[in-house]
Amino acid sequence: MAQLNEVRWHGRGGQGAKTASYILAIAAAEEGWNVQAFPEYGAERRGAPMKSYVRISDQPIRLRCSVLHPGVVIVLDDTLLASEDVTVGLIDENAIVIVNSSDSPEELRGKLGNQNVKLYTVDATQIAMDTIGRPIPNTPMLGALAKVSDVVKVDGAKAAVKTQLGGKLSDAVLDANYQAIERAYEEVK
Image 1 (cartoon, rainbow, N blue to C red):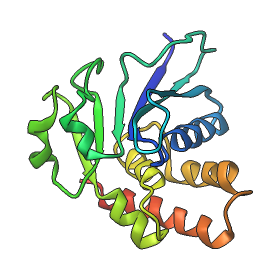
Image 2 (spheres, rainbow, N blue to C red):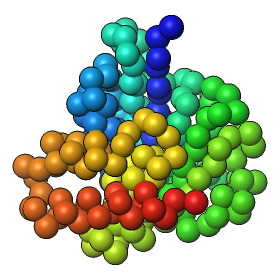
Image 3 (cartoon, rainbow, N blue to C red):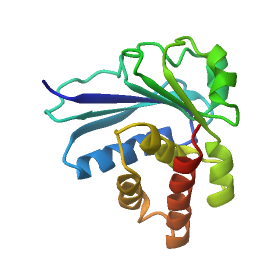
Image 4 (tube, rainbow, N blue to C red):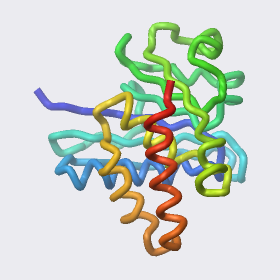
């Protein structure tokens, strides 16, 4: 039977959901998986809610639609929990939801539409501010994902960050992103 992992990122324009989905796809491809990553925009403006998707499979991927039944949902902005049901379509009680929030999973559980998910939180924005100096939570969320699932490994995420962003960022900023990944891995609750 084919193995298919589907990940849906929820964020706002400018938070790096699209970049994070591409980094995740690169990490999976480097491990030999077939991948597909693409964003979905509503109103195309900075700060508007948006989604980005990643499919990872051991077979060629022929689907060409949004991810409707993800096994993992990553929420880059916890204020989206008040306006969107980020859990819609989750495949089963083993589904994982990771929320960028300073709140604990227990504090956020009541804001989720689906109560039967594995819920994790990490303060990725604070981690990004402390390590990178900017409130872009995408790379720390990859560290949290590495801790709570088998979708990506920390070393794979760091290598993919270098592949995707290496030509755009200085070595110091790349190192800061690596630190953010490692710190989120350790701090996810």
